[in-house]
Length: 201
Length: 201
Picture 1 (cartoon, one colour):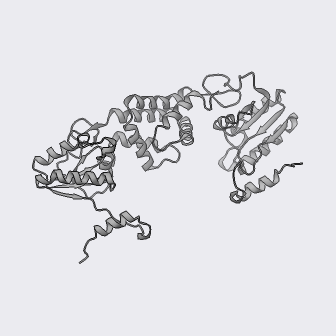
Picture 2: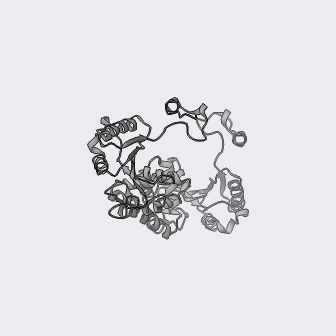
Picture 3: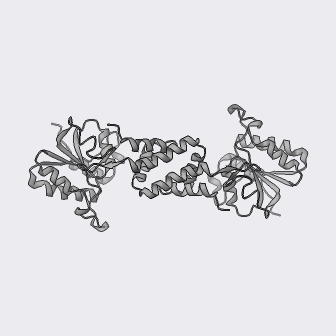
């Protein structure tokens, strides 16, 4: 006899595909599903299939959409089409959307430049960004890649590319998180916070 | 627009049903599934349905089985039918099976006595245990409930019930875990370890 009976073992292996899930956590999840009602388990299974079946990529921004064609954000006429916020991946769009203040559009790169991993500019959704800017309606591009070496490199690369289109290119401010204690900030964050200091005068 | 598009939001809510999974972890899992191939996502969905469809309860021990009727352990003629290990739940059977040494059978209570939660003896799989013992082939019952107050109470209750059948009733030894440091053992564990000390003579 295997450690677990076959149907449970199989589900444990499926759960282990999820990020950060080891054998014990996967077993805990599998036994939780075993205690679901049949209806709840079917709903769960259906949701997994649904996310593959009902999620589309927006042809304009490269973000996720629940229908074919332009996503809800790109097709929203009340948003400011003059500002594009460039993010690494589709999840970042949703994170940025939690900040209710932003009313511009987005552009999803699908990653960051990383020549060592063979991720060169042609692997990213950059051409489409340039053509959106080249259309002439864009005033500002806000680059919101992560504050990592690869995110920085990508931001610099995009800033260079966009220079000739006469748009203002900015980057998210990096510094001490609101509510955090300077004592516990790492050196790079403190360095960035110093560099990005703003006059109070 | 919601924080996440509908199919993703739905999957996030499903993941949140799992024990210990909050909003951020659920979102991480949902986006991982989004990056699965269609085939992998279908396999995952199928495994969830399978665990409800293909898992049966063994009518003898109350443990899990991958078919109707007696489970692999109860029907294994090479195992010692004279020893029954009583555990709280079906998962514990699989945990005990990892200890390769044990060759007896099991009995799954389906919980422990907890009058405050309205879990009285009739709610547990106790009658069936008594009738297995009453058949006369059982020499020893090993009670492997957890070392919690409810587990202790249940063990005592079962020991009383089984007294009249003339079987030897034992309980797992509780003490310092192998490889642990006495310094970090809690008082109850140390107390149990003292109580259960064995002569080296």
